[in-house]
Length: 634
Image 1 (cartoon, rainbow, N blue to C red):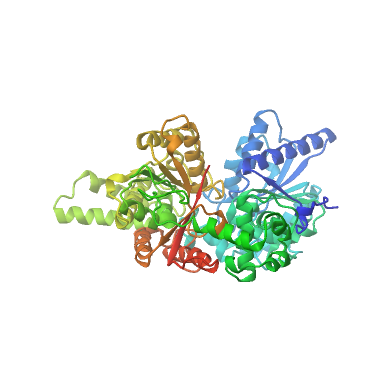
Image 2 (image 1 turned 30 degrees about the vertical axis):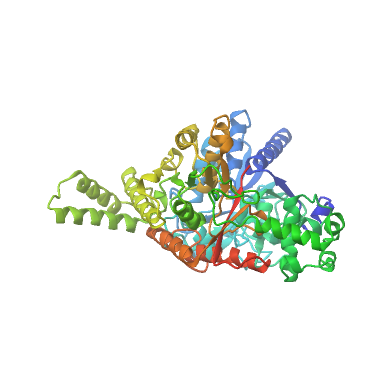
């Protein structure tokens, strides 16, 4: 029997629990796993766990390791992993066998014989029989007590891509193009991502006595909502979980954003009609009925489930005026504040002028994608702008670009007639390391240093395109990134210290940052947490009370109109200049996860800015070429 649901959950076909963040959810789930293990131990039985890989469960595994250090034994636990890339050796840096050892197995007392990860090297003619035996091993130990899942952006669970049937069992599968693009950074390019994988089937997963799916970050919001609220279909394998008698989803606030109870709460019950919710409802209504805000009438509200809002804050005419004015007041061509003017209804203060603006970019290019036009505006209007790159971004540079850079160094030395320099020796050393580098092996410190230099050069060129002098650029090279790799970053106090030092030097009146809604394991989310922590500790500083914090977004995920506190229109020339700036990041044209979703990354950024302008136009406000949006962070 599924758990009973509340009025607000009436459209949800799977019990779903919302948590403030992934850590809170993982703490609860780890405790549940501990109780299962202890109960089975008391019965003299083994605990049978189905485990997932990828970025989603890493926090859960860290919590299980912590519980083990406090005394939890895994000696009587048997595990079966969902999947493995086909063709990868167990020690390959991106194999799931290695992932499980590094993330969990090497840190707990589970017997090696009790762990099972599909073999990615089994011969092609033996795969079918191997998969049958994998199924039989699960049945021989009594079946899975608990299956842990993540969810991919295609809706896959395990590697059950769209088209997988409800009854599918362990098998070899073709990986979806989007799944491969999402893994591109781990493999240093989509061309290196395996095309096949061995995965448990949907039917295998549904045999587990209990299933828990975890989802973090706004990038999972749409697929999570579809899996929970839409009818089960082959094109969305996670939706088949609706038929399981003991399943639940654990999602953080960001991943819940597309659920009806979050996105459209007025459709499932009473609402606290604060200013943000009023604006959210009215702008939604405008789009729903296809009318500008000022043309909405009482019947529109009543017929679309907003009778309560109309009753409490109507009539429609007054609501329309209120929301139209609130939305209009977010628009400003002066993101740093307009000096010597009435700032009563402006998002930024007129004074002081000029302001010190500090823009944090998690990786090079994030800044241009999210606020390239605003950056140019701030500079043109006389503000003291500093761009701080939290990380070097060297992990996203393909080897081919590094080789090209070494050739350039050597050619320049030959032209100068001085081929025996420190620079040429460094270039030769990197060339040798690249030639002898095994496929997919980790970069040496020298290779990473060169790749970081490449990203620095691109960042400088991009900032110059936007009018920012090179001396106003800061490359922080935070240690968590330089010492780590994707999915295995571990920030420390040293990272926060670097950011705190810069804040105290700049003492900004404005801080721009991003990553608050990203997957918690991403560079963007980790960077946000580091900056936020440093800012929280700076609250006692005199400058902090006069500092506004502005959130910006990546190009693949724009704000909804009701979320905006500042909207900066861009002219055609300003938009074109932004695109030219993004274009300077040449190594990222095919490496950014957004690339491939219908166009190059600069085209996606351009389209996103145009889209938000179209939304304003549809509401009946002024028509602009493009708009960059920001939310005030309290």
